[in-house]
Length: 208
Image (cartoon, rainbow, N blue to C red; front, side, top):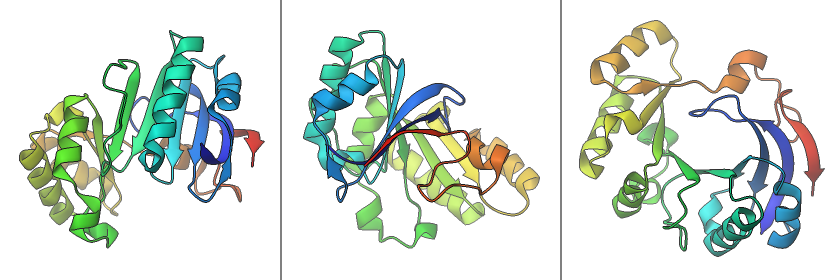
C-alpha cells in the first residue's frame, strides 16, 4: 500500500475519542507491504485509514483488512472516504465502519467528480455514516437532495457546521433531524497541526 505516514491518535467525527493507529494513504507516498503494516497494526483494536482517497488502492485496502482481521479478529477498521469509489472484497467484513465525507458544491469540485449515487448507495447499504461540511442553508439543501436521492437514513447523516453562527445553524440542522458533529482535534487544540498535519493529540509512530 502507498502511504504517507503511520501514527497513533484519537478517532474523530463520528466515533469520537478512541485510541487508534492511523494509516494515512497517499498515491504519491512510499510503498509498504500489507504484511509489514499488519505487523504494526495487529495490537491495536482500532485502525483508521484516511488520506488521499483510500479506495484508489481498493485491492490493497481489501488485502490489508483481511490480513489484519486474521491477526486480530476482535479489531475494528474505520475508513474515511469521499464515497466516489466502491470497495471490493469487503462485503462480508462486519467490523469495518465507513465514514463517507461527501463534497458539496461549496468545495468547488464538479458534481460529476464528487457525487456517484451508485457508490453512495453501496455505502448506505453497508451502514456507512455520511459527513457533510456545511456553511449555510444552501449547503443543507444540497445535503437534503443527496440524502433523498440515495435514500440515506437520517441517523446516518452528520453535519459539521463551518459557518460563523454555529448556534443558529445547529437549530436549522435540528429541524431537518440530522446529526451534528465537530472535528474534535481542532476544537480542543485549535489549528496547531504540525508540518505532517497531526494535531498535538496524535503521536508519530512511523513516517515515510
